[in-house]
Length: 606
Image 1 (cartoon, rainbow, N blue to C red):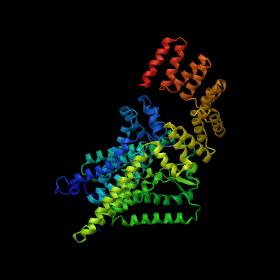
Image 2: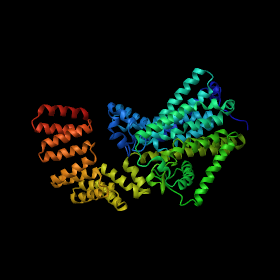
Image 3: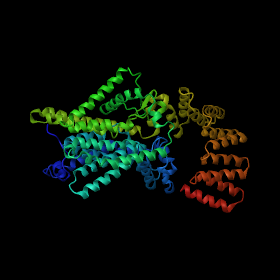
Image 4: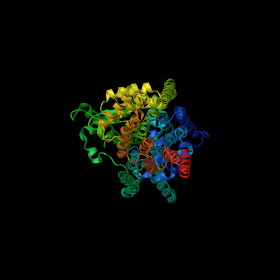
């Protein structure tokens, strides 16, 4: 088979769209893909804020004030990641929508639709076949494994994919360009988009490697005359990657260094990763029971037959890609895409080092960008089948095949709609995950019921969580809060003290214990516990405000005022601290200052 190249940009509109013989025929695949993506995911707009949305959006002061935006570039994302572009997107949405989840879900849906179109356009360039591109993009558009469409905090994968795909498309345009000005423009924008992708999620860092694969598979004849010159455009991309790694190292203080994390069971982990990649691939084919909090066990030893089998399969698939790069370049490219883009998220460096001796964290949202390679292969394969059975002599088979495609589409849409319902609230999500992992998810479900005001269900789940994990200070503290809300003060204090015994530096447990002591009328013990909370978390305005309230009850006005001023210094946006201080000053007759602080409290609350 003759070597296949990407069509020149100047001819693309005529060749891809088919000489306009069908009028506006080339717009129909775009409209159908958008319709399918929206139909499968429209119900996400009814969802609320769930899981990490609370800390990243609802309770995140950094995104709510323009003055704190620089902190986005100096602080981690969920303690162990560095994704400032995602937080900037949340800040922009907060300025428009406030805390209305509809706007955030709408952004995720629009991003997914944009990614579907980018996949379609790229697939056309790689296959020169609109039908193959359409079929692969359709599967990507409706596949139920893409939970990032339904979960706001998974914006990371959507944004990284958008910038990754757009940067790749413009890089190809740069290689195709016949005019210097066009080439330079496409190239500069491509590098800028890559930077945005890298600062959205780590997997985008694989783009420089995918650019080299793109050049090798599709542009090698053009570049082989001067390979060194062909490699020069990679340098700015690599510099951006180095910049990201440097800034990430400054912002993220990991409890375990990258080298130390890599050295945790390295041989067994490397033997496990191929099986993990195959497991992910099976989810694309059979997405029937998706585990959103999955862990993949390490192979038992270096002699594990399953580990060797997984490595053999991955080696065979890689060799197949290298063998096919001339005969079927799109297939080869799709295989290499899947294997390479998975790299940063494959646990080569464990994502959770504390678990790496026994299992690997493998959530399904890692599939979003890598899956494009698999869908590219699927589109080409389905098109080949369609070509064989679509002739007039196989009219019945053609009808059956078309019907099968329609049924698969409807089935995947149904699964996606069911997924959207599951991701609508914390209770629905954690009820699902609790069925699979009661040892880990009972606590999350208890918190969800607590937030919904279903106290008895929360207590039952907290008690189960404590029974399953008796050494979890979070479970004991949560159960204590539930008992506290139920008026069971002695039970609550017992749980808080147990939590402190398990984790003596837990400021939250001391703060909650102080509340229990207040309700018992033990103000001196409450003050001591609250002060210990402040000692362990001096930057918490909440703990300082609680301490001040205890001091007010003890009629120690000056000390209470000091604590409230400390609370305001710790968080100048804490309206509660301003309001309590205004009440205190008013009680002491300092009306002028009280009015000033009350005015500020009202401003912050509005």
